Length: 510
RNA sequence: GCCGCGGUAGUAUAGCCCGGUCAAGUAUGCGGGCCUUUCGAGCCCGUGACCCGGGUUCAAAUCCCGGCCGCGGCACCA
Image 1: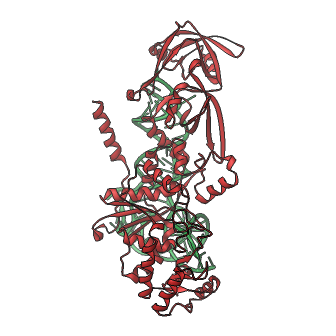
Image 2: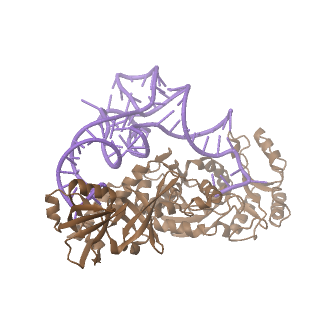
């Protein structure tokens, strides 16, 4: 019975879920293969997640394959972060994404060199020895540089010289021949390889083994073909790159994959930009709670503060492949996460501004059993033995107790106000029955047993500000590190860590 | 400056390709009610939008033109 209910619930979700529009020209390719190609220079954020999730979901939708490819071909400006490779894999696994193949571009350099040589042979590329300024000036006028029309043998020879280190940084590049009169100057004879002095800027994986590095447009274009990618899903900022890469495909007689461009994702009140985050961390390391500080829009940050992977997935699916930029409002994210988390998460008691309450009329010791969820019994319960009749409730609830005279300590007892002195409240237990509490319409509040309490620090992000609230939590939360929980009447959050004498919680939302 | 893309309620999205069924659907937010051992969830009711101006047409959110606004690219970055 319960099993049946659960299944029908899942089916309902499935039916309600946003369907993605069909992919173009699937018939022409006969299969679907997509890829997610992050630069491992930092953690990935919500915007990257859009590319990852859409690519993965489309592959799944058509029973196709999904490739993870690390694009780490810039050891100088966007230097890969050695830990980022695994952190990105971890983020993807967290999202429930599985990949069929994985590649790292820095380990495919020989492949790129081979394609470059082929391109030189067919006259689709040339080695340009002009200083950058000079080339730019010629290009803006639509004039060919003197090296463009030299024969393939000369080009190949110069490329070998590039590889053997005869040219220094900036002295030679390999360019793809496009159209010198293309209306967009950026498209004209773009750079496919440049020289990077890896003795000065070693690559974290291959060190100084290579000095001739492919640019993004070259490596991505070649890999998409070699890996049999049929559909590329990427941000609008890549629109020009599609135009550029088309020339390379034409030189080699390859067929370009279908491309779907979508807009950027912004998250209201969050920093998403990798470079901005890196900058902030470098400049003010002491102001942040680490690389996954909850004010960032990275997946690890969202995870740390208690956003669930299903929430991210649904959010992205709802955005779809629209061309326009989307600014997600935090209210919306929180609402979705609340919905997802509600049936999944344990309820725990935390009190802010705790006040001691001495309970009269208890037979001690007393055993108190508290369910972790009002309806989902499989989430279990915790049990506390009280040998002292002392609990904590919130200051604001003391005021409620005073004005209402009676209230209910959730899952425990109905208590009546007696008196308050020296910052301590005395209350009498009137009974334990919830039915009585309901009949009397009592306010129900969370509480923490004094003998089983632990200090708690709750961090809450508000825009760029980080607030810290302190309070007392029931000791059971020490066992829930890493879990997303609902702090009854306070909000959702994730138990971040347990220190010697306190627990740290990241607040997600109310 | 030059290229390109886009503008549906506070936010996000459906519809636009193939004009009428759209006095514009959905989610969230907001207001109200019900339910509930939470100020959470659920259920019900209500609220609220086609950027502007022309044109085509019997008929335009949907097609055309102009304007305005927003975004992206113009790297030996990805």
